[in-house]
Amino acid sequence: MRRGPGWRASARCSAGRLRCSAPRAAVIRVIAAHLRDGAAASWQGLVFDFNGVVFDGGDFRDAEFSGGLAVFDNARFSSGTVRFNRARFSGGEVYFGGATFTGGTVRFNRARFSGGTVLFHGAGFSGGTAGFDDAEFSGGTVDFSHARFSGGTVDFSAVHDWSFPPVFPWTDTPPSGVKLPGLA
Image 1 (cartoon, helix red, strand yellow):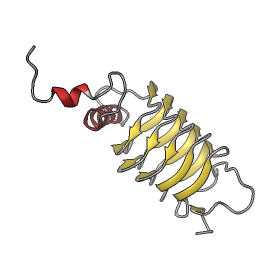
Image 2 (image 1 turned 180 degrees about the horizontal axis):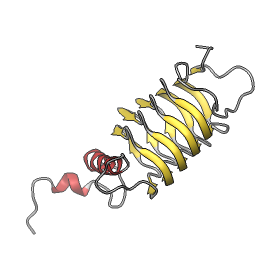
Image 3 (image 1 turned 180 degrees about the vertical axis):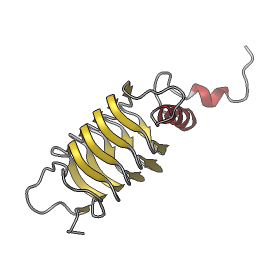
Image 4 (image 1 turned 90 degrees about the horizontal axis):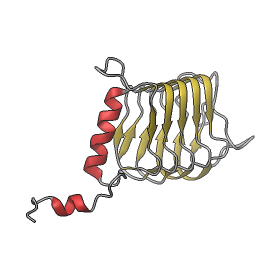
C-alpha cells in the first residue's frame, strides 16, 4: 500500500485523543470560533469535553460560556499561551477539576465571571502563570477551594471587579505566587 509523505506523523497521533499539536490547535480554533458572538453557527450551550487534553497554546478569546458544559478536567497547561481573554462566563458550567498548570501562560484578562459555575477543584498550580488582569468577578461561582498552589504565579492583583471573589482554600495569607487585589 502506498502512503503519502506525512503518514508517519499522522500515525503517531492517537485516534480520538487530542495529542498531536497541529490537529489539536485546529480543533480548538474551530470550537472557539463557534463560541463567539456572531458565529455563523453558534455552539454556545453545547457540551465540550477537553478532559485530559494537553494545551500548549489555544485561543478562546471572546468565547461565550453562557450555557451547556465545558470540561477541562485533568487537562494539562504545560507550555505556550492559552487565552480566555474577554471570555464571558455568564451561565452553564466550566470545570478545571484536576487540571495541572505546570508551565506556559493562561490568560483570563478582561474575562467576565457574572453567572454560572467555574470550578478548579483539585487543580494544581505548580508552574507558569495564570493571569486575571482586568477580569470581572461580579456573580456566579468561581471556586478554587480544593486547588493546590505550589509554584508559578496566579495573579488576581489587577482585577477590575472583585464584588464576588472566588472561593479559595485558605482563610488568611495566600500561598506564595498567588497575588490578590490589594496584596500584590
